[in-house]
Figure 1 (tube, rainbow, N blue to C red):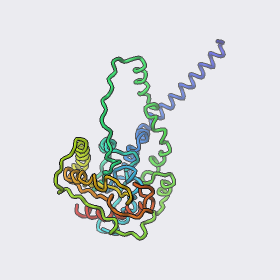
Figure 2: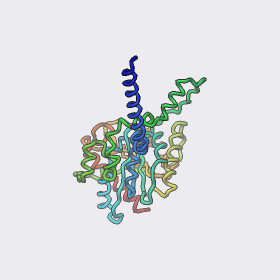
Figure 3: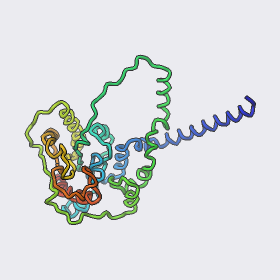
Figure 4: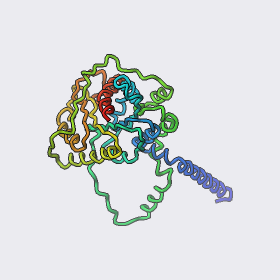
Length: 324
């Protein structure tokens, strides 16, 4: 190999090291942002931290994420219970959530003195929790194992999952204080940031929307091992908020009327035991017979449904908030 070839190789290696070093420096300087971007739940929690005046918080899966607009809830509360004043909130639900994800996420939530009410989804999607698996025990540590462990300490490798959510950086860094959490599309985020007024429900029928309220005074029932584990997890989650003086309510989102789902019957005894053991009400909207145009699919409300459901939640929320 000639001297010129060696020099070109050295220049290439030196330039590559410089680029990688610069990338590592950039990543280390923005660890908090990348940590939030690496997980949808952590991203929502980071956005919620930009709402220190929020009085209610919504946690759940995609069934609540696009189904509740805190801005529309706040407007309805002003009409329903004007004595409460301005009640702001944030929707921290996210697609792919589960009970395991919720349990891991709750300790990351930044509490403020204004937070008064947390609504937590309990549905077949949210209650799903993979069975714990035993970790494989390696009989020997190879050079490859050591290399993998070393590479994981490099920050731009460690946070590689975050690069797929780079498009959310504006929402996290710039739009966050103007977003209420339900906006999953860029067009909705930009519209909210620009102050667009959301359209309220037309021809709202409150008698159609009243939830089945399951009270904490329900009778005790025997649970199998899996459901016992689910209830214990929810007791811990609720207790995390309750010890800070925050009221917790469990919510079962609406479903299309022709969908045969466990939330409409089979899971009701479990909901009753959740209410009893956590000392929290369960608001079950699943059995409500609602018009099909409110839904975008069998288990998710559409834009029109979001306006109606947001207004429907204001009634029971006002009862809880005024009683505090």
